[in-house]
Image 1 (tube, rainbow, N blue to C red):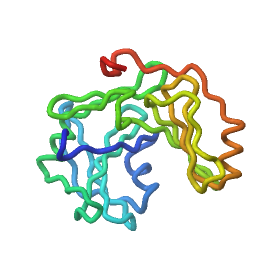
Image 2 (cartoon, rainbow, N blue to C red):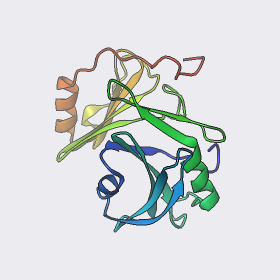
Image 3 (cartoon, rainbow, N blue to C red):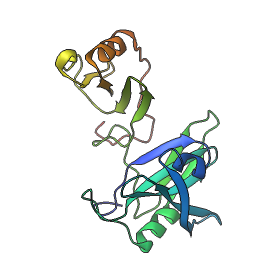
Image 4 (cartoon, rainbow, N blue to C red):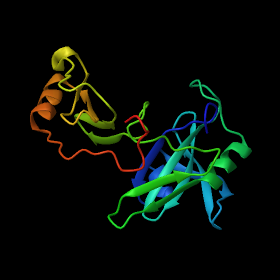
Length: 195
């Protein structure tokens, strides 16, 4: 929801309890009706500081929408009305190819692909580091210094994808040398008119 309750998503395949359980022992606090006769659970991962999650099940995908408990990290917690608006107005479906497509009814808006800040990051975790793919317009050929610390990033040759690495300089160099990305396209009908 513009300005007040804007949120990022955490998306994985599975069930709500399983996915919330990645952050801590899951406890269902309450649930909210969606507009299709289902329920959207509001979960607390015990041991995870200051964040609860609305958990949407869209076919085989779970979408977690975070909510602050206290505002400790600078964001306002939603009230019941705000969480109900999310539950009623966020929709999703799995395509025949297995991808998740999200859409929303007003006043909720799903940010367009290629927009800034990017509406989607694809994150890969490993014991030695993290790779984040961010669909956004970027400068071709840009590479931050790989030996400069625990974070580096560069722009894919498509100029539509930033690749961000967190980890040692050796890990970043290995990813830079070995990661291959091709055929990057913004999905039709999702980018803004000036993309």
